[in-house]
Image (tube, rainbow, N blue to C red; front, top):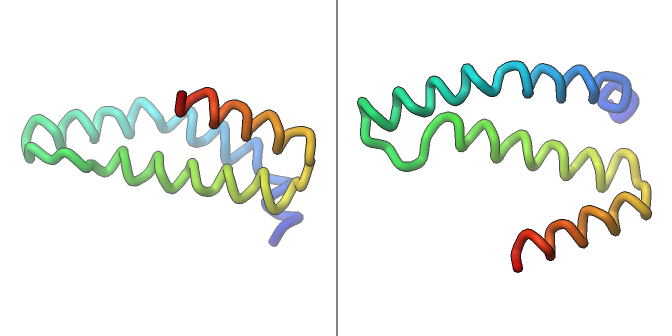
Length: 78
């Protein structure tokens, strides 16, 4: 499975980026019609974020990239 994820990671990332406007459309429709605060788009984005974190930390295992992500995370929190 790890090799498959490595091989197809850029395709998965590109697919997510191409589907983002459609996800935003569903999110805005659900906010306007259903008055929901936690939407389909938020769930999809959280799941994708967890997938990317898992891929970077456990599949690629590059220590240098890990430091950059940690510093970015700390910067984002502050």
